[in-house]
Length: 232
Image (cartoon, rainbow, N blue to C red; front, side, top):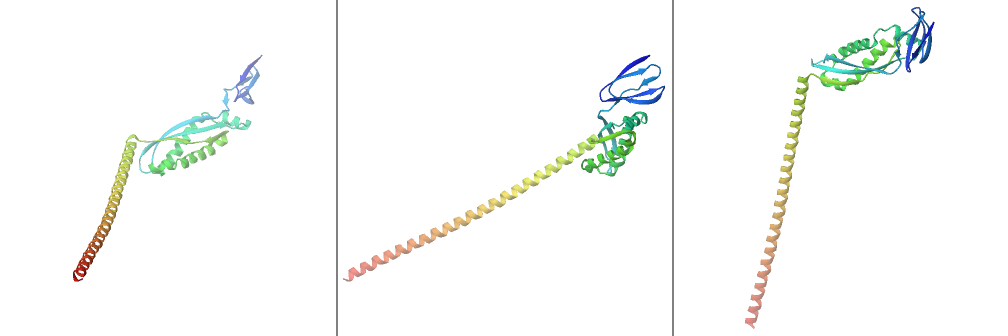
């Protein structure tokens, strides 16, 4: 007596004969012999993602939380599919365990401020470890980006206060520099005004002297003419 099963798209199912692996069923319709053949649960061939949240301590003794997104999938090869199904009981929990191990061994070597800069290095270390451990079990690790870094709430508040103080100090320095520049410019302007006024005063005095000299010459010329006229 036979019965049929369906295999969904992007999945595989293991066909067993009397409990022993027989073959891998691809998407479509499969006919099996009752009491002889059995089919496993579907094994997804799609790209899968796990978000792993891990708390650890930095080199300067600050507790932070990291969220790592692990993208992986089963290698589309019959041998790898066999390993992925029969060799690993719970790949998700095992992936999480390795992520915890790498994060808690790498982050304690780095100061808090450098964690944000070195996150690509941490991500690469996670990817290397997972590829090494899960490549032999039929899984391909595609990416392990760190999607979030969250320091302890008190540390976060202290960092914000430090940044606020730093920005306030920079603003005060900029304001002081602006006042200094204004004072220099005003002094230069005052010196220029004084110089211009001095030149103007000197020119005015010169012109006044020239006028008086000409006036006296005119008076002397008039007196001379009068004396000459009187003599005649």
